[in-house]
Amino acid sequence: MTNPRPGTTPGVGSPRRLEMLTDGVFAIVMTLIVLQIAIPRGPAAQLPQDLANLVPTLLVYALTFVTLGTLWFGNRTQSEFVSKADHPLVWLTLLMLLFVALVPFSAGLIGRYPDSRVAVVLYGVHLTVVFTLHACLWLYVSLRPRLLREGLTARYLKWSRLAAFAAAIGYAIATGLGAIAPLAGLIGFLVVPIPFVTGLYYRGLASIDRKP
Image 1 (cartoon, one colour):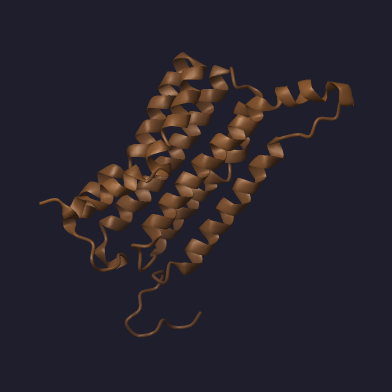
Image 2 (cartoon, rainbow, N blue to C red):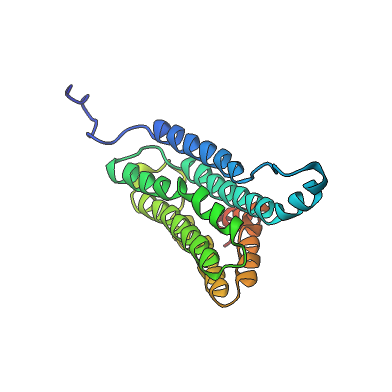
């Protein structure tokens, strides 16, 4: 092991390789979820019915792809503000990716059993954990100025820490609804990403520093 250069801290370095790893995991997981969609193998006359039976799986695929896209975009946005990555940040990210890599399993489960309360709750708990870890990443970084790029105001950091948990709270509520009625949980999972996909969430954050 070589000695670190003067002025450097062991374990602290550029976040670029961490970003590359994160992007790679998301790319693989977002590809793997399509493998849950099995090609019908029955006779041609039965194909319309077989395709109709695939509708729940296709809907779960679309929902999960959008959900992962929401999470990836949030991670990309956060990474724009990070100038350095230290040892805890790397391992917090790896912990998040551990749960991200499991998404094809919970998505496959709910795709096969969309009416099951257990499958819906498991899917919701999984998403809640992933988005909570994602929020904790920003909480950790935002409390350590040495890891951040210059230009972020104290006001923005304060409110962004709270806003970072919005998706996790939304999925927790949707999971609770799913424990009562699976369909309500599925609708909740569909609603939560809307502010992020439409950009409303990010426009709200961007407006914080413009307020008096």
